[in-house]
Image (cartoon, rainbow, N blue to C red; front, side, top):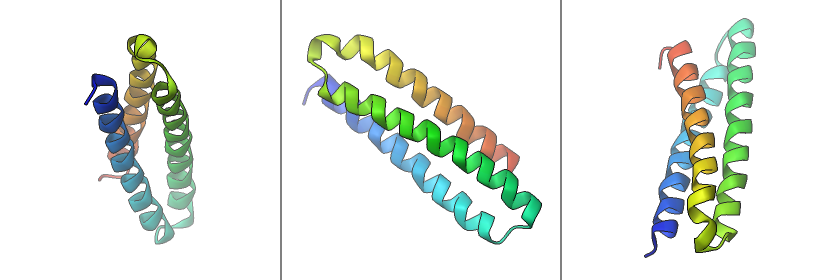
Length: 96
């Protein structure tokens, strides 16, 4: 399997893990107070936007030629790092 394909699978798995965490936040938000729900939904929306952007970049990477893989990889990695940071902040904020 090519490095490109392995990288795609790795990042896809990381986004799937992030989505599972977002789903967990959604479940927790439903039982929270109104003020907490507002904050949680704000964090969830931000995470979902970052994941959507990351998935779009990952699709671009998947559709790109091997020649463009390295240059596009940096963009995907940047978005993933930003998503991870936002997830970490949300997890820390909610004590998870």
